[in-house]
Image 1 (spheres, one colour):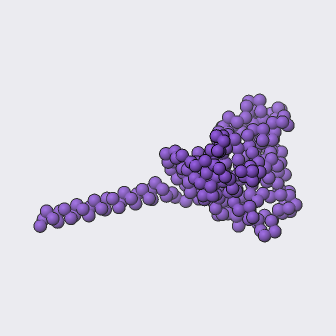
Image 2 (cartoon, rainbow, N blue to C red):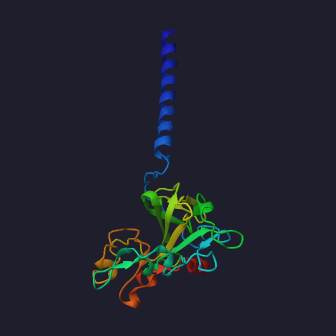
Image 3 (cartoon, rainbow, N blue to C red):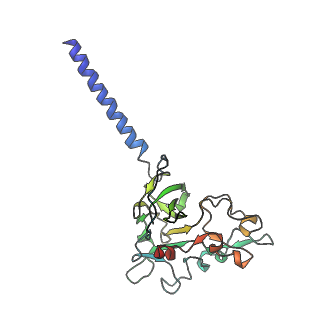
Length: 260
């Protein structure tokens, strides 16, 4: 009788330990505190990126276009110089060593805001909207940006054997881990709440690591733009041929998606 009781108790203890292990795995391994990133996973093999789509619904989100999206002197399209961002010096330095004002830089992606039914920017309602993977791919980078949210980077293997990378800035509630394969349209994060400035900056580019993107004789190399794997989201140079983002391997994201 005593032996049967001990065996029963042992069985209950084993079940309890298994339940505890499962609880720890669920709560510690695949869940995270608010604002935290999931731990990396072993690299998974993604499906080929044989189709692309927008990270947000283009009927409800889009770039700020002056005199179209609203009354502000703001332009968040690809390769635009945005008068609305001010004149503070940024990380690019001209031949004289002077920092280039923010409003003279060329935008290397597109900033998409929430739009109303008339195509005008509404701002805050975009916060929390789900952001989707633009194609089949694998997560290669995730980074916290403090009050600016997080940034994610995905690698995409095209059917012709080449690669492109998509980058998503100012996101929150990250739902994927570095190394994880994702599929076209999969929710990967949400737009970070930055008040009226809540938006998604997204890029398509032909390189992964921007930490040595600018050579020493370029404005970005003379300044402090290197050293960041995801880059700085802008380009500029004293040489007009090297000033625009296309020169450095950035692609017009909406144009690329429509063409693929």
